[in-house]
Length: 216
Image (tube, rainbow, N blue to C red; front, side):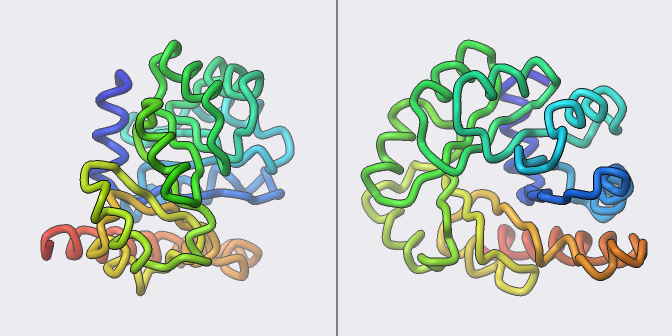
């Protein structure tokens, strides 16, 4: 997939699973489980031990409809490394214009993290494919609705505070996609290796996202 196709894939699926697991042994099973439930965009954060090597191993081996991306990317050097490793999209907790520029050069989808309207606008005008609003926990869906008043064309994605049950509120407020971690990746189920729980939670998440999109 080229950059445009990757962006379309992320937006049509709508759900990005944010993985911060330290147990890399179970990581592939988790990805397979949520993928079976319909979550096809996987963000592996740089806080995972050996994250770049994991991306390098996973990227060529996952099914073709699953995208592996990198999260918590905060500098240009790391962005280069994760793209070389096979990441199809790059997500940051901050706005780095250097990373945005590099991802353009490398034809890779870039989703920088922003908080204020000024940051959101700066990210979009710099060429962000989607602007991640982080931490969205502190802001809530109403913030999205307020921001989209003056910026109706900016593609926004909340990360933090998104749950299976409240995803419809974020979509109604204008989010084009959502990032979700702990509410999707049930820690107890992973510890007990009950991966079917993750598949069911992923299925519910995707269903709720699609119903919300259809209802707009």
